[in-house]
Image 1: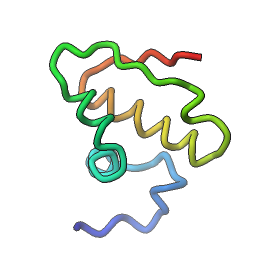
Image 2 (image 1 turned 180 degrees about the vertical axis):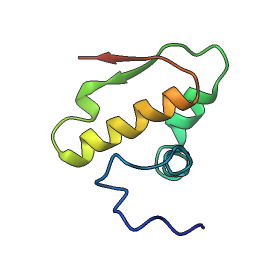
Image 3 (image 1 turned 90 degrees about the vertical axis):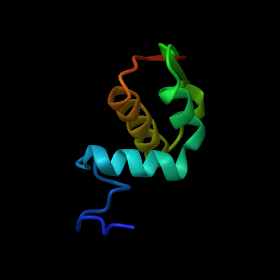
Length: 78
């Protein structure tokens, strides 16, 4: 596994697209599957699934960023 840069990628939004892809592959494989499926647009995030912590907000950021990398739009359901 390649060494990450010196910043903490779990708290910094300044991560590369490659790091986002790696993180989603490791931590959110189902989200990756949904985003990579042809014709699955938009993908939907239930806001309640990510509410309540900074880590949750970071996970939402990573999920949305990966969807953009995969060429999908995202709908956030309240």
